[in-house]
Length: 231
Image 1 (cartoon, one colour):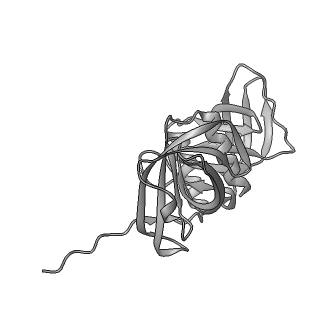
Image 2 (tube, rainbow, N blue to C red):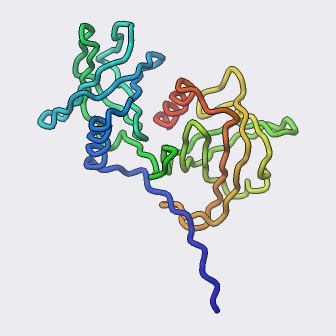
Image 3 (cartoon, rainbow, N blue to C red):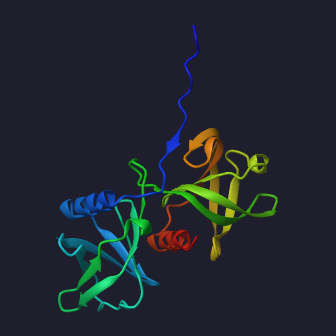
């Protein structure tokens, strides 16, 4: 009797359609899903209160006791229900704490996988990680992110690096992209999975799963998202 072949894991491409963006925004509006919007260190929570289909704009009610302090000359970031996007401001109203944004261009959008933990799928994005192993050796190299959440990171291992890491080993992350941390972030290697099929990279990839020792704070997670957008 033939042994059934093990089904290989498959991750989605980062290419996003306008319909996907629209559907994700409509679902956040319909289900009253909180979103996070930010510009630099100015970070606030909000709810989508209106979608203007004709002009491709959305209106958000900001949850803050402070006046809105966003620059109309700079892009603004939005993250909610697993959608990371960059867009522009149309107008703001401090009296009602409302902000009107252009519906994001699909080219600026990253979406999660269809999983409950809302991992951000970022295939094809190369970010340099600076890690320190238990023997104090620093390792810095570019890894293609497969997904990212506040719980951890999964990344495609560069060829020849497989022997660098051991499952269950603890590491410290000193840098992510061009950002460094005031205090290192402790990680545990949750899995090292071979023969993973990733679009644009074929079937024979090794994926490293790194779990944060603590769920990242929203501000820390946003800094990682910003580094992805810079990549």
